[in-house]
Image 1 (cartoon, one colour):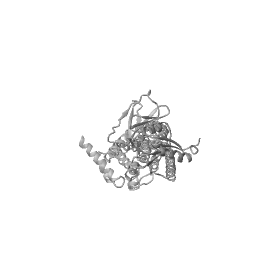
Image 2 (spheres, rainbow, N blue to C red; image 1 turned 90 degrees about the vertical axis):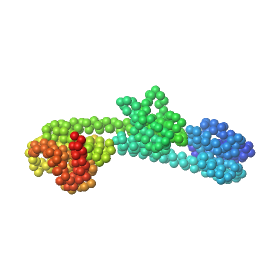
Image 3 (spheres, helix red, strand yellow; image 1 turned 135 degrees about the vertical axis):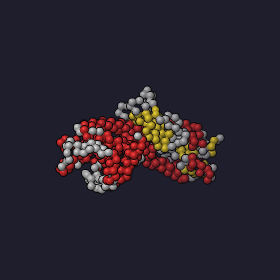
Image 4 (cartoon, helix red, strand yellow; image 1 turned 45 degrees about the horizontal axis):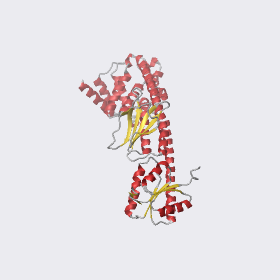
Length: 465
């Protein structure tokens, strides 16, 4: 039967037989089904077994305070219907207390038929609209997750987006995301959001494959778990700690769908990361092959990476940015693979025409790296590391801080490495002479702040020796 055709069902908690019959008469005449109880325990038992669209509650029951009903209602794992308090104990204090406990409306006895029907119809309708809005919000969230899955393939960024989105939807006190370590089979905590002083989350979890495989599980009274399944196995676990939140059937269905989508997203991101690492490893091997051709440039990329990361650390970069900087340092000259050996290995000064060919290597680097889909900042660092702070560099003639920070760092580290290395057309410089050259060109070829940072790094290394 369609939802709109089904009769609305109302649970009534009222001890007065005359008023019970009045409810049955008025509501029955207007096509409502009623279930009448005169004590809280019987009403709660019925709510556990049957679905109702509204509850009408009297606050004055034999030997019981009707307000206690709200406390017991919160313990049920159901989508609780709205509660209309209807009582002869009419006072501002009672009304305020009932609303604080969770009442949707408050009417007094004696009531008129119009007052009762108006309250019943209004609260059922508001509840229906609220549920529809919630369903629309869930659909919107799933669409948002699909967008994240499509657009984000970097696992750290994906983890951050997942925990933010889930936290905003589920609204727990604390949300936790665990990712499986394939070597140990354990799940390690990667992201958290929210706080609760009494809750101390586990740093890692083990999973028994013979245990319950349901996507959603209650771990304890306040702790809930959603398993994140990939195509074949569990790849992660979401946990929610909530002091008061009750998850109903709609929440469970949504979290089950959500968990499956997240699991697939994490699995795909992990596979892409593995492919990227393999691709970077292969390119590093090519870089080593390129540098091995020329005794003068051997280990150049290693040296550039060393100085670039040292600068990055001194600037306070986080670990992810330092890793990107290290990758860019290794890859920045890969475009020279596309230039003839007789130019790359020439033992005398290059002609103007040969220099113009060499200047194309950042563009060639970009083309080589495109299939890798590396981070934007890594690609920009490789592409722009020959730009000059005064705008006289290549390939685009960027100037000042329009040159990305990582590219400015690479420019300084790359030049230092070149100056202190032997070249076929000149002897290597002493470190003090290289520093002098960097200072001379600070503000023209190089970012002066980065030059000063590198000099400080070098001075500190000398002191440590």
